[in-house]
Amino acid sequence: MWEVHCAGDRRGLQSATEGGVIIDGKEIDGPGLERALVFQSPSLLPWMTAFENVFLAARQAHPGKSKREQKDLAMKYLELVGVAEYATQMPPELSQGTQQRVAIARAFSLEPRFLLLDEPFGMLDSIARFELEDLLLDLWEQEPKTVILVTHDVDEALYLSDRILLMTDGPEARLGMELNIMLPRPRSRRAAMENREYFRLRGEVIRFLEHHSKQFAREQVA
Image (tube, rainbow, N blue to C red):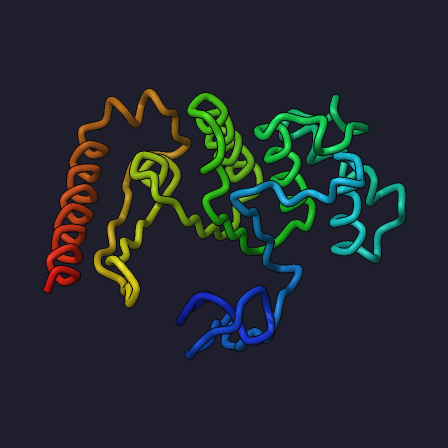
């Protein structure tokens, strides 16, 4: 069971103003290897090669494995995300999309229970974004895990998710609507776009966003 009361933790990336995060009945008090995070920016260490970035994560997450096993694990995920050929290159030499593939490989090399994605494709062009969305779905099919994705892209949310939690406008944002996405898996973009349910759900999301955007604007004027 996984229960989330608020974003952030007490001694993690950001301190919580109130509440807490509970996993398996225990409140977490800092970062943990059972949780992997992919940011909007790849956030790779620029003085390390693509391989070394992933190997560093694999080594920390699996100290009981031999160095050879840790290296094999790093290469496994570089191959799975399709960038093994760039293993010896430095992050500044790679495109933004390739860097983000390396960041995803690094996250999966932890073999975490939970994958937290903070607008991971927000800085990419449409083609690279579509490719990485499909890559993420393929990886998830091979190694299912709980994934929490933060995104402002309606179609991305619908295509990737099983459940969408829509937030009202800030600064005091709250949960405004919950939608269960019953599109069949495994998913393909073409099949999703041809599904009437997809467009019904898309309409619900857009109506919610438009309503709360107008409401927020009225409150600001008042």
